[in-house]
Image (cartoon, rainbow, N blue to C red; front, side):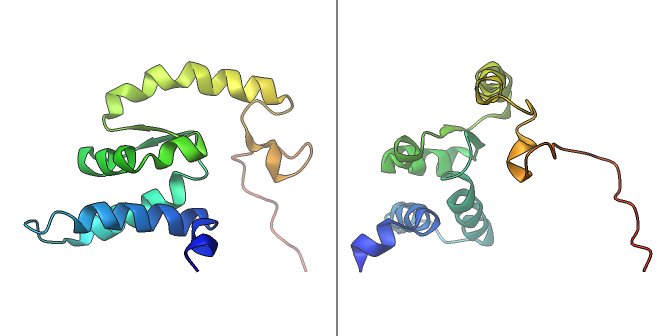
Length: 120
């Protein structure tokens, strides 16, 4: 069962973060702990860069989950601009729509215009 659970990225990240959070028995759990774990369990396996609070970034780094998914975890928003050049380069290397939205469908790209209302 553990081997199966380890193959589900969001579950694996959530378990690793909860284990580290549970290890500090002197600190009470708060609703933000659950929100942080939920958000990181979805973001870490599928994002290139994740900004987390200092505690959760530390837990994720201790668990080394970022290494398995190739995710850079930072704990200060001020660190984000330094990450942008590598993200831009990665997007350019992928070819196609450099915004990264080409995965929606060939030639679809990202569009901020509202869709035409259905007249039916």
